[in-house]
Structures are given as C-alpha cells and as structure tokens.
Length: 452
Image 1 (cartoon, rainbow, N blue to C red):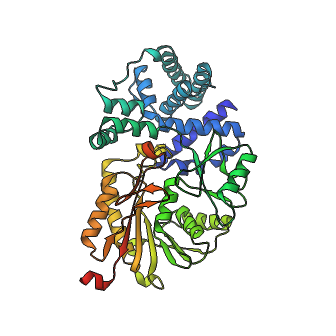
Image 2: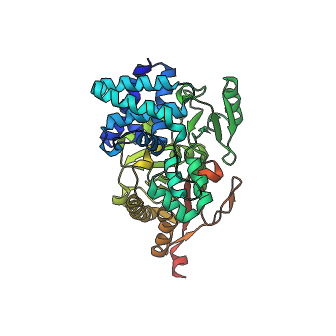
Image 3: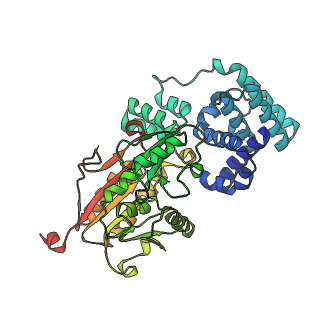
C-alpha cells in the first residue's frame, strides 16, 4: 500500500494546486481515494500532505540545491513528487531514505516515464548524499531569508513581521507556526462537564490537558487522532474548536433568552458555542452566504442536541433590519479574513495570500461591520473578530468604524476567564499557544447618549 498512499497524497496536493482550492476542499474531493487506505496509511498520507505544505520553502531550497533544472521550470507533478520524497527523508524517521527515494521514482515513472523517473532519482540521491553540507541563510546576518527558508514563511510575510515585531518575536512566531498544533475540543456543556469528558477520554487511553483559559476546552496530544472515532463524538459531547475561538464566543457574553445574530457564521462553531452558553434557550440566527456550510451547521447542531439555532442564507452587505423581525441583543461579526493567525492549522493558506489580500479583506471587513452595526438594538453588543493578527484587519478596522459610527463606543474588556485584555482581545501562537485572533467588543449607545 506504500505507493497507493503516496499516489493519494500526490492527488490531493495536485487537486489543491490545479483547482486553486483550499486543502480542506481538496481532502473532501479525494475522499474516495482516502477511503481505500488503512487507517495507518491515511495517517501517513495526511502527514505527507500537511508536511509538504507546511515546509514548502524548506523543501524547495533542498531540491534546488541538487537540481540543474530550476524549480520554476519543473512540471508541477514532478515538483510535488520531489517535495514529498524530501519531506519524508527529512521529517519522517520511520521512513528510510531508500524507501522515500524508491516510491518517489515509482511515482515519477507512473506520471512521466523513465526519463522523468531518472531525473527524480538523480535529484533525490544527490540530496540524500549531500544534504548535510548545505549552507542555509544565516540566522544572525539574514534573519528574514533564514525564517523564510527554514520555517517556510513567504518572504513578503517574513519581512512584514520583521518590520513590525523585530527579530526575536518574528523568529518565535515563525517557529510556532510550524509546530503541529494539538487537537482542541470544546466540551458540550449541555450534555456533560469538562471533567467528565476528560475522564472518558482518559479511560479510552487518550492523553490530554485542559485549556488554560477557556473553561470548556480540552487539548488532545499525540499523532493520528481522528475526532470522529473519539469516545463521545457520536453522542455529541464535544466539538472541535481552538481555545482562542472559544474565548471569542465568551466575549459576546450572551444571556439566556436573548436574540443573537452570528452574521458570518460559516460552519457555526461559535453559533453553537453561543447556544451552549445560553443553555439552549433563546434565539440564535446564523447567517452565511454559503448554503452548504449552513447545512453542515444544522447537522452539527443536531449532533450536539442544540435546537435554538436557525440558519439563513444571506449576504450581510445586502441585509438590513427589514430582513429580520426586530433588532438583536448581540451581534457577532466573525469576519472573513486572510487567516494569517491560523497558519499552523491551515498550512496551505500561507502560499495563497499576498499583501493585496490584507488590504482587500480589510475593505470588506469595514463594510461588513458597518452593516452588522445597523442590526444591534440600542444598548446592545457588537463583537468583531478575525483570525488574523494584521493591524489592517483588526485595530484599523475598529478605528475606522468608530470614526464613522458615533452611535457606538468601545467596551473595554479587562480580565475574563483569567485572560488579560486591554482595549482589545488578542492571541498569538508564539505567546499563548492558541491560534492568532483579534476581537473588539462595542456597545451601541442610545440616541440620547449620542446627542449628548
């Protein structure tokens, strides 16, 4: 099955590249191929796919050092075969170099014949012999080049972070983004407690820790964790959600019986957490432009036993209060963003983003926030959140909003769940061990307060 595993990994990587789609969608599209693999082979396939995307610059540096053909001129399938083989040689201790080389050559032969296979064989054998003598960009003299190659951060982004954070923080951040994150669960408190969930996981032989700040979170460590197979999944005892995202839901601070709008709901992790916090009592409207995401949200709600969430396909930019029965007590805008705060979980995203994307997203985020603000009742709460640490997408969006909207004021958060906030809620992978998030909480003041 070794070659079938590598064929499937290559198919997934090629599908994502050629269709210009996300890794998640490529994995969904390749489910038939994955279904034919054993669990052990599925684990290896996933390790190769995620590893190749996470370490792409690092792998390309090695490949280019031992190839007379420039990477830019290589056939894409050949390049991915080389990346896969070099990744296994460098990062997978259980795969001997000869096995990585042989399966790479066999893949190349199947893709392009003996000539291509000979090229792949030569590059990989040269790499195996000479990799220890490679000279890498110097950490102290050329830090930006170093982190771009060694930690596979696009050069424009490494330079941007260096200019903003300085050398030490940039290095820490890039290292953190290349570590495989734990699987984080959010306890479904409608059905169980975190302590009881932990007891069941321990009884099933899983190693775990409780999250530091979220009172609902459980961190699972270890390789090859498949959430659907965990004890308690089918009975809805938990949902996957990073600790930072769990804290964003708590920032909304919903109360039992309130009317809540999740204005950019997506798959609905925060909608369903809000329902838990409201003890499944009240009304939560989850809005998104993608019908299939809302269908998955509905399915998850059924698994978790949540009944107070309804979905509505809608573009928030075209919505106004006439589309709803009345104003909402609280509105969450978990806005579409570059996702540069969650690169450790979505390694493919780093290769798809540009500085222009930051600017484009920020412009859309400002419009979304302004539209959502019109749906909040006087005295109500508006929370804006993104999984990005870029200023244009967070502080600058809030500054522009407050300059325009005099009917809103920033609500200082202080401490909550033991987490220290000042004006905003911010998390970073290198300092908090969470995904990179930003959130701001605002209050819509009454018309009388505005006139004063």
